Length: 265
Image (cartoon, rainbow, N blue to C red; front, side, top):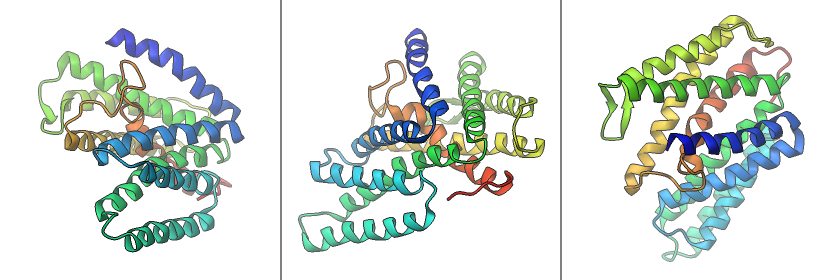
């Protein structure tokens, strides 16, 4: 299993980093593709058998988040979400009782869960020195995930939330937190003060762990171990990106408020 995980990461990570380095439309397209795949998995977790129409509406919502929030256009994002909700609710009203309220809720939540979170990947890349800032958050998150995994396997004794995620331990979380803060305290060449780096580390620890547990709750609700099988050794796309999906938006707003000249959503 570990060998498969490493091989999958070795194949996919360079592609993601290459797109991040390229930026612009290339990175936006990759983020959009990841977001669409994440929505497909989320739809499977939220509803037993989502209809083609629901999937289409959900992907439309994902595209809306990517094209507004991802491109740093908050006014357009507000207009989009208003119109999107109007379309979803009009469909439910006009086609009652053919369209259930829980289906409408699943479409909106799923598209926001996948689209709004991933849109911040693109938004962060647009910040001054966005390439380095995004890479910084990626490394912080990976430091936590990797260290927590190995520390948990070796020394994990006290389960954090056994009913939700049996593999997570307090020992693993503590090891991951120490590794994350050590990376945050390292002398990075970034346009942010040392205290902002440390705050970034704390945000990544809290938000990333919450994102992981949030995705676990969706899987347990459906009685599934993985969100999908697109990534051998890792499970689904959500299984690999769940921490980043919450860590990136949290860090983005910290940078937006603290990085000189930063403008965005």
